[in-house]
Amino acid sequence: MQQLVAADGIQPLFSEKRVLEGADVTLSCKYTAVNINNLQWYRQYPGSEPEFLIFLTEAQGASNSTLRLTAKADKQQKQVDLNISRTAVSDSALYYCALVPTVTETHQTLY
Image (tube, rainbow, N blue to C red):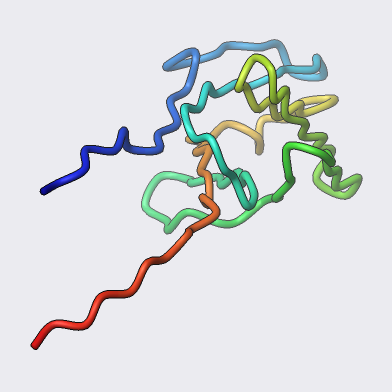
């Protein structure tokens, strides 16, 4: 017998955001996972690999003052937000939200 399980997923709320230099902007993603280890944000500049920015949990947000970032999750809404304060031209990039589910393993021996 096979058990069907809904896949954990995460999707951005907007495909693009435009903001004036110096203003704050919030990027948001919705997720469907039930058990989450942590949530992560990455940034990718054209022609470069994605770079890790910040991670957080549903219970505890995170911040990086050097990068002007604040991240928080809303467990009830299943939404994670990344706020970039005082945006600069160098903040123009592709941003990725990612989740790391809490994995519960079951083992079965095959003979």
